[in-house]
Length: 222
Length: 57
Length: 262
Image (cartoon, rainbow over all chains, first blue to last red; front, side, top):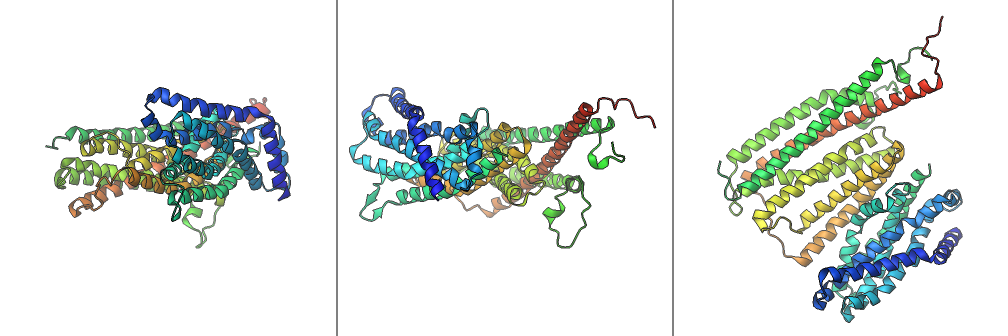
């Protein structure tokens, strides 16, 4: 297991060193959220009603942007094959890389959400629920997305193909994520059912993602 | 046949069903013919599968 | 390479069909029957629909669309089921014809998914007043179409046939694992946002029979088309490998144009 943490730390420090990827994702998040009122009109009431949806969808798209690189960088210079030949099972390699994506891209995107919420007149009371649901959903985004990244590793229009493959898989996360914002994350009866289902989907993604990604990576490296 | 006030929708549904399925069947038949012709052409030129070679090359 | 397969009593159907040549023989004999029975059933169902079955109390004659919309939706799902089972067969059992089956099923399944959406939309306009309604069923079928498109796009993006087969199979299995969750989430979402559209599940017996015959007829048609598509794919791969052999031999032995004197 120590190999897992080593790989995780390595990926995190690589991502921190190359701030470009995160910067682009954050920038994209900002641009998309800013563009929507331009398209929908400045009516603050309307915006505040649909703000959770806009933020969730923009977060998904921004995360998708950065997912292509999860395996690409290491594959291109041969490190992926070296790591795969090592003692750490390929499933754990994939999991470490997806977890690194969660920590270096997913979480920062979520942390930027409150600022963007201001642009959309998001109801203050909804902030905790929105952030809670996003944090619960981010593992699903990265881990399901890693499957797409592995499948499209060598494809030419990889980025677009990745989006086509992965966006349908995001539907449950999106639906329960937004539903969890509507019903407060936690009430007198404990966490809302949407929040629980959202977390369950993320947990399932933690298992399904690495298994499918590793299988795909094995095929790509044959 | 009186199909009521919404008859165009009914005809359109059955129409597009027929068109799509006909196109699908046509593609399957044409593709099959194309492959069979290509195969016959190759075999006529003497290209044989490894299992069909009677004498070693 | 063909093996001589001794037919032991414990050989399952899929094992016996693993040999492409035997599959070609068997399917050549079965397919005409499948297609013929399918055509007969569909014709009979259409006769029932247009000349026998009554109009619906609420919907009038537009209920006739149901007799093709429901089979299309069912076949959209069955098609994906075939893809999933084939994908499983490839990755777990390495069945020689599994990839052929998966590749053949995808476009046919996608076509029926498209038809389900179009007929659903054309049914929706007179029923609900708009061409598109985000009800749970139509939304799930729309996402199913995206899954099919993903499968076809992924396969086209990979040049090497073996890799394409396995990657598409992985995507197929991921899709089938997540599909129930997607359906569940869409139904949940639908109950949150709009009341039940009142689409009655109970079908009057006088309508049930033509519906079943139609569904069965189109199912047989699907299977016949799938079989034909598999045959085409097997031929295509033979052509490809023969062409490759031809090119290889022409390149490696440029003097074979002159036969060896004995």
